[in-house]
Length: 219
Image (cartoon, rainbow, N blue to C red):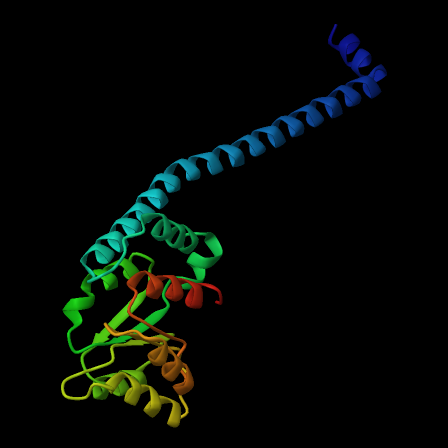
């Protein structure tokens, strides 16, 4: 009987080989479907995990910026505008460009900017604060900064922000420079621009808008 079975297999060998090939193809297709299924499920799991975290971080940034606006004298609290800026900051390309960018903030009263600094740090920006121009020049010699934000008057020098800007430009530094001061007139803006500043404002939301636009548009 065993001999008859082997003879049967041998005489029908092409059919058995075809059946084996079909079985292998079916197994391969099944494995491909399983792999695609795993990839899709992994992406869905990641979106479930990352989505709420990203939303929470955006809401924290919105809340921080709104708190800063409410505390800033004379500032209009425009939550819609804040959300637009924060949402832009959290788009993938802009978020990648912002993450790790460094800002040197020069102000002899850093506590006045605490809430604004907190809001900007929610956007993954690295902010170093100093209280005078000498400390600012030392910091700039020690590391690279992507942006300098300065107040205007410090101590007896009511043009300290301009003087630091002129010093940096005269020394060959082209680091972007924003002036953020309680005073703001068309004349101040013109003079700041003439001296090489990219912005002069007393509007905290305008400051945040420009930080996101300026640092988030390029790697």
